[in-house]
Length: 131
Image (cartoon, rainbow, N blue to C red; front, side):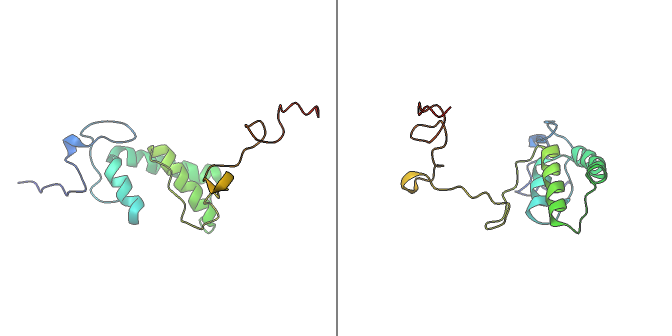
């Protein structure tokens, strides 16, 4: 009797690859990467698409001349992998330089401040005759 799928992995018939959309596509037997990224790939990407990424990865590394001693190169490859596999962009770790800082809007509402051309903003077509 075949082993029961783990609760984190739906049966093959219920699995739809995020990249190719095939139902029942062959699953990855184990996470192909360490940590949460590997579990995310295993949960959403079929073995065939992962194999295609393996071939594309070599081309990306060579064409972009990535140097893995540079953390920025590792991040570039990660972004390329996510785009290729149709995975959502990974959130940068809190406090990292890649984490976007969104300035607070009026009264700390969390919305960006008004900019040129926005109601209440500065510049733009405000009729101040500076054009």
